Length: 151
Image 1: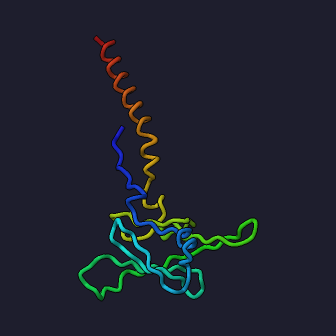
Image 2: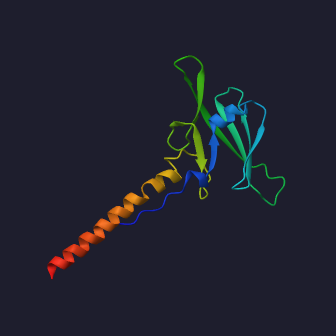
Image 3: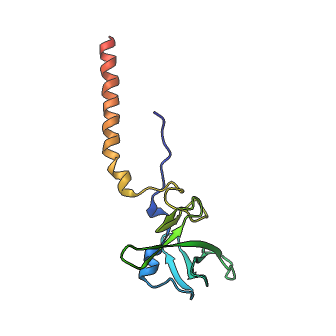
């Protein structure tokens, strides 16, 4: 079969987690600063007046100190919980699905869910490594066996 393009890992991408923001009580109309050490990127996050939008102003290291950054407006979706209360979700820009985490991979500039950006988890990649190796060995043995019988 043909080779496949290796997917980026979720750990390599910048991640915006609605549950992290809620636990830290950062979902307010006042801007709060959060950062990602891997990419030396930081952002201000704050809710809109109607509490249905999350504003994220991304700041990348640049030579211009007056750079206002890139403003993203991410729609929020509220769902009712069975035992009362509400849960907030982020809405993916690319497919419109509700998710707890949005990502920006190293090579992209827009927020999107893991599926839209084609990201995978490290554990998934490692879990199937032995399986792929086993299939490769079987193909080699099958090919060698058929060569021996042809002679």
